[in-house]
Amino acid sequence: MTTYDDASAAAPAAADAPRRKRRDAQGTRQLAAVLLSPTLLVLGLVIGYPVLAGFRESLYARGQGLDADGFVVEGERFVGLDNYTAIFSGDRADAFWNAFWNTTFFTLTTVVLETLIGVTMALIMHQAFRGRALVRASILVPWAIPTAISGLLWRWIFQADGAANAVLRQEILWTADGFPAKMAVVIAEVWKTSPFIGLLVLAGLQMIPRDVYEAARVDGAGALQQFWRITLPLVKPALLVAVLFRMLDVLRMFDLPAVLIGVNQKSVETLTMIAWFEASNLRYGSAAAYATVLFLYIALIAYLFVKLLGADIIGEARQQTRRARRNHPVKGRRKGAEVAA
Image 1 (spheres, rainbow, N blue to C red):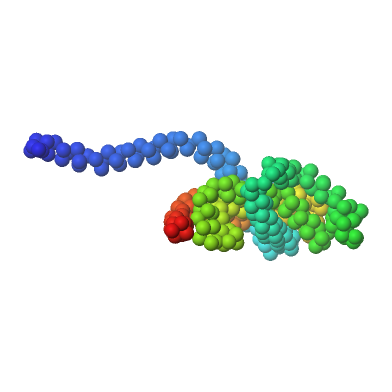
Image 2 (image 1 turned 45 degrees about the horizontal axis):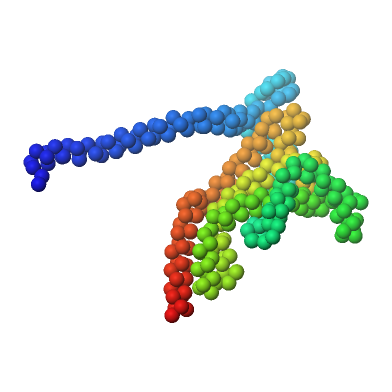
């Protein structure tokens, strides 16, 4: 039996409960801020400062020039947005748009092909068969080879008297400037990085419960239905991460086309290559402008990709697994009971 004194003593404690919760939440936030501050500081130094320094450099030009009064000005001078104007509509506009479309072309073609081949690799490696460990190890070999070495290897294959022309029995100038050079870069890039997507998708496949497939088989679902209704939705988070990483990597492609085809080749020139060319000719302001435009392009693609295809990939994976377990096992047990009866 609760007395009046007990009730009067419990009332202040109940009134203090919300305040204690707020203090605990505030303390948790402060602890999280303290623990994250070293990481944020490192990110600011490694990422934030170079981005701001590059943007600042893009507003200046170096070398000799004339001021408004016609006097010669040496060294660094402020030019505002002139470097950006020259990129989009000036004397360097043709080179920029050519590099922009090359970069976009390589991104779309290689990522699509790598996704299809990588998912196929993952499905094969996920099956139980003799020698599976050897197959997994051999598939990862191209990804482990350095890009420069891979470019030299494919340059030997695509030369005029190389293995590619011997197999095709045609004389194709793969390493010259033109559309075959684009195809050579695409083939070499897909060969090298498809195992990366396959590895991440394989990790996602191993997280799918076996009982979901067993229940689907009891329900009469075929292999294609299992792939579209179970495998693809549940492996989507890992696949999105793999595709996003590959897109960000291809957008800043430089070493493979430079080694395989060469620099200053219009058919394979990318935004990174043209920025490097400007910097190598001591036009640092123009190079910084190219780098800034490429950074904004990559940031926009990453934002749209995550925003449109799903940002909460971890929560989505949990919901998909929970939904699949809730739908299929119940039907499977019911149908199994009907068969047993």
